[in-house]
Image 1: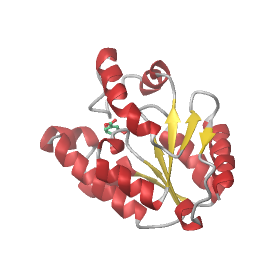
Image 2: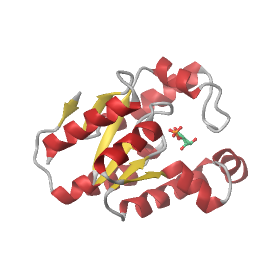
Image 3: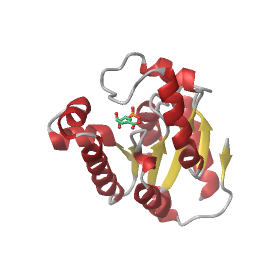
Image 4: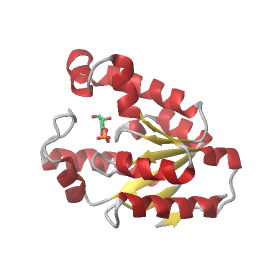
Length: 178
Ligand code: S3P
C-alpha cells in the first residue's frame, strides 16, 4: 500500500474515485467505503444504465463503445460535481486523458489492484461486461491501462482482504492525506 504524503486541500477529499480493472471490487468496496465515510456511493455503470434506460451490453451493441465512453465521461462529470461522494468507476474510465485529469483535479483516485487471475475469477462469465474476453485479450487490455491506474494517488492490494477490510484501509490512507 502506498499513499502520497503531500498534504492536500480538504475539499479534494470529498470526492473519492475508485478505479481499477473489471473484477477489482470497486462497487463492493465502494459500498463499505461510502458507509464508513458517510458519503454517497455513485456507481457510474448504474448511472449510465439508468440514464440510457438500457443495460451496458445493449448500449455497446446498439451504439458502440465510443458512445458508451461519452456517456461514461458525462456521468463522471455529473458525479464529480457533487461532494461527499465515493464514485465507483468502470474499468475503462482511465483510458481518457480528460477523465484522468478531471479526477486528479477534483478528487482522490484510489486504485484497487489485484492479480489478473483473481479479477477474472471474480468476473466469472459475466454477461454484463461486453469487453470481457479470453485471457490474452484481457492481459493486453490490462497492460494498456496499467500506466494510468498507477497514476492513482492511492494504491491498495485489492486481493488482500474483504471489501470491508479494504474500505477500512482506504479510510486510514485517506486520513494520512488530509
Ligand atoms: C469496462 C468495465 C465495466 C463497464 C464496461 C466497460 C471496461 O465496468 O464500465 O463494461 O472498459 O473495463 P467494471 O469495471 O465495473 O466491470
